[in-house]
Image 1 (cartoon, rainbow, N blue to C red):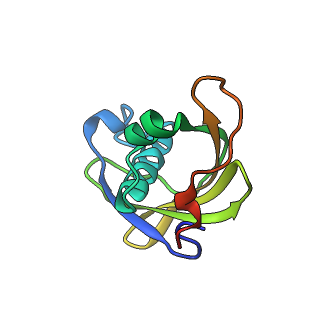
Image 2: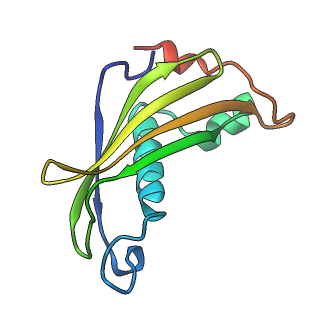
Length: 133
């Protein structure tokens, strides 16, 4: 299983565009932060999503996302977003993600990705790289 038990971490800086009028990160932007970290997690393992789509007609779609907002992030904060495989099924993977500031959890999430065939939009087995580690 790719990254099984391993925690990947990616830094994020909070920009003005990420905040509301009060300088607090708008809740939906935590999903964007988590998406960036997931993309970088895959790239760090040599997985290019464009190549995956072209060579294997495969892509990942978010099947579900459950977030808990614990503390606010603010303009200019330096954050870290983690990605860890929590559970894997034949055609989907559940990832545990945490957004932290100086080690303090601000937002936690469980995101389930389904692997689908681009042409049919039907589930397909996870690519072989999930079994590499």
